[in-house]
Length: 352
Ligand code: SIN
Image (cartoon, helix red, strand yellow):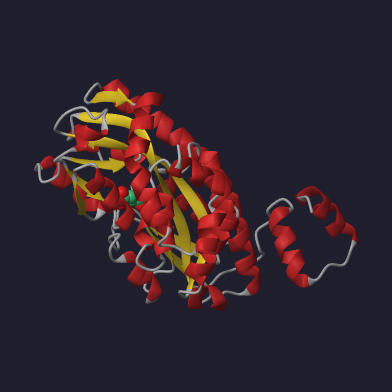
């Protein structure tokens, strides 16, 4: 049902109370009328994340907080803790499970201990456009992944984007896979990422996101992979000499809520929350792309890092190197899920 049709029907038909609450949230976005909210009635949602405010996730978390406040008349207060100020990426999942915080949005890679299938989205060159990632995440593959996470006792709310990842180095420009040989490279915790860099002859090192800047500055790392918005907002471009626009991998997030907290939410609040997350997700994916493009412009303008862009024939060489990775990894995961990733994309990667 289109929202506009639903709004019309709502005026003429006596709907169930439950549905009315949902429609009220869509028809003109009126706030739930809590005349006065005492401190005891207030619902606090602590939302912890590790990136900067001016990133897709940082901005979406703040927008979510503002909309929830407006739509619940202040009954729900979403407190956003950015930059790992409350918990690091290695601590936040446990803090969520134990109920110290109510929401997080970790990168998919950081859920790999819980559900190894998330690592499929770490496969290099899995899809060539963000639209294809969205189709997979919004379709059968994403639903299956969400089901696996749900069975681990968490509430998956949405998939958010950051962008494609790029490579940076202090050693020399990276154009060929062999340029990575001998490099010490920071990765997120993921077997696929670890194998990927090992195949290139590099030394992958798992490290918490907020420790990367210092490790790059001190020369403990030669390079790292990340999106432009994470590179720019954490100033990695100021402590690295070379940036390669490789678009070799995807960085996306799963927005999660603590199960007990979610189940105890009043029904009408839950409806507003689900609707708001859905709306913020659409917005987030649009701004994610804009933010990354804009910040690439800032990096280019600062003239502080040498930039290499992979050509399509360079990309083919990288894809060839990763062929064995696809063969070994795809057999590790639930075959129904692997099929849902889209056979044609996978076969292309297996037999380019
Ligand atoms: C994030 O975007 O949440 C952090 C990604 C990383 O650890 O590199």
